[in-house]
Length: 372
Image 1 (spheres, rainbow, N blue to C red):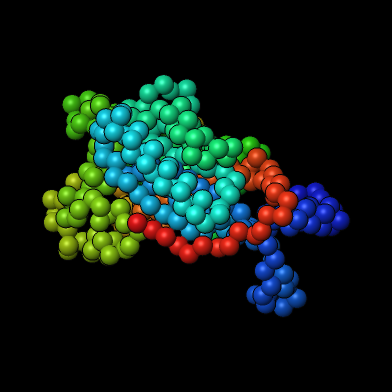
Image 2: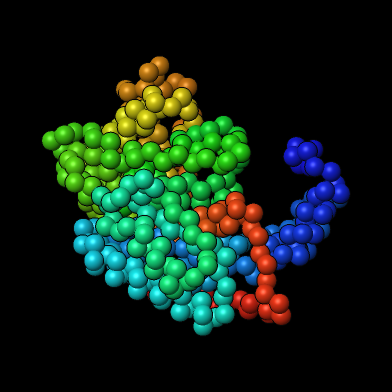
């Protein structure tokens, strides 16, 4: 590892010492998994805290966690599709105020806040998905949590980064197209080897598949999201959408067993998975990436989904799907606000993770988990 990054042992020791002095990493002592291995491991600190506002699944989620990814506070407020701008601002302000009050009660000093918004684009004055303006969120945060750096991102960027950071994901330096299917549908091109860790969002969910098709929440007709989101798929599986959006796996066992799904529904599911593949193929025509990772509900039936999605890709991709490496991620809906915490941690580390503790400030105690 040291040879790969081009640093000497002495340089590594100095860097680690600085990180420990700033409280960014902790020592963990345990038996190595193999003979002769290290007995001391470094982990990100549990005494530095970040927060998130994650808008997804018809809710405004807020959460506080440490750099190890442990969520210490979690709360959500209902924010249904189509909520008017004034009501959306009121709901979001209440969520931010509640999070700030919790931090004050527990003497938590936040180092970074991440705001994850579906349909977000930095140059866009209005959002067709959620009626919230960036400047309103910024002003509200400055009033409730002054001087805490904040980063904004499209929801699919948040999901893609959370996928990269989760334990157990095999590292592969090839760039890939990450697609997530939940209440919303999004895609992002991810370059693992890019020095700037670029994640480029692609609004695949609002690619129009049929101009005369079903109405989408963005205001257009026939978008891919109107066919393959959890809201569109839930009736075919005989489930409520909120059941599909929970992190529990009970509904997945049911859909894996084809006997539980009527034959006409199975045919429609295959058709929609083919549409998903066609949209992915269209995106790959514009970017020569040939590695695709699909997360969300299709991972529950990937054996059935794989040939169908590949058939859709083959239909639209110049050169066909032969060279496409398609895999499915276990990343599920219902992880809010854990995905936003991952984005906040990523942003904090990305800006250098500079922490200058106030003189005499005590190490913050680790509060118990609170949810609502």
